Length: 267
Image (cartoon, rainbow, N blue to C red; front, side):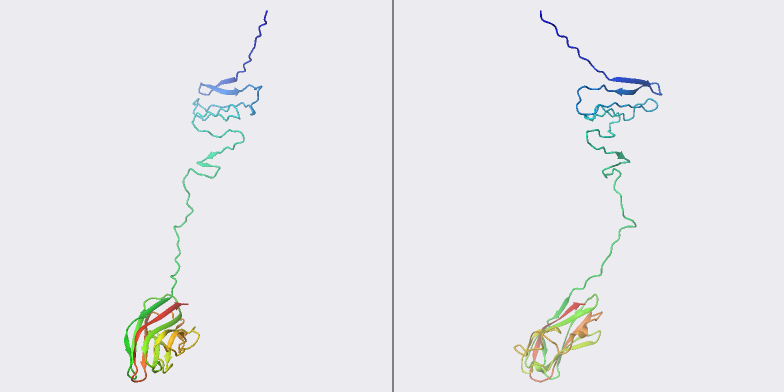
C-alpha cells in the first residue's frame, strides 16, 4: 500500500506592534520582517515610524521593505531619499540639491549696474586729393595754388607724403612747396632740379632712397624732397587747409597740374 507524503509549509508572518496616538487613533509603532532563509543578497531591515501629533497621518511615512528593492511608500507623494544598492541620495534643502542645482531662480552678481569702458578712436592713415587741371606758367613768376582740406584727425601727426602728377617742360624752372596753412609750417618739395627734363609723376617721401633721378619723366616714383616733410611730424592739430604752391621761374615753358594728394599717417 503506497505511503502518503504530507508536506507542511511554514508561513512566516510579519509582526505589527500597535499603539495609540495622542488623538486617540491607532498608530503603528513597529513593523518587523521575519528573517528569510533564502537571502536575496540584500539586508532585511525593520523600520519604525511615528505618526505626527494629533493623529493626522499627513507626514511622509516612508516604508522600506528590502534594501535591494528600494520600495517606498510616501503619503505626501514625494520621496525623501533614494534607497537603491550602492546609490547616492540627493537631499533637497530649501529648493537646492546637493548636485548644485537650485530651484530658487537665478542669482545676480552684478552690483551697481552695468559698467562699460570706451576706448578712444584709433586714427587710421588718410589721403586727401585734388584734381584741379589748372595751368602752370608759362610766364616767369606765375604762381599756381591749390588746396586740400583735412576734415578730422585724432592724436599727433606721424608722417606726411605728397604725390604730384603734372606736366611742364623744363621742370628745373619750378619751385614747389606744401604748407599747412593754420600752423604756417611749409616744406619745399623741389627747387631748380632737373632743368632740361619734363613732367612730374612721383611721390615726395623723406623715406625714399634718393632725390629725383631726372629721367623721363623728370620726377618718377618715390623721391626725397628738397626740404624735410618730417617738419610736419608731431602736429597735434593737422586739420584744415593744406596748400600746394607751384612757382614758374622762367618764360615760355608751361604745363598743368593734373592731380595731387597728401598722405597723412598717425604717430
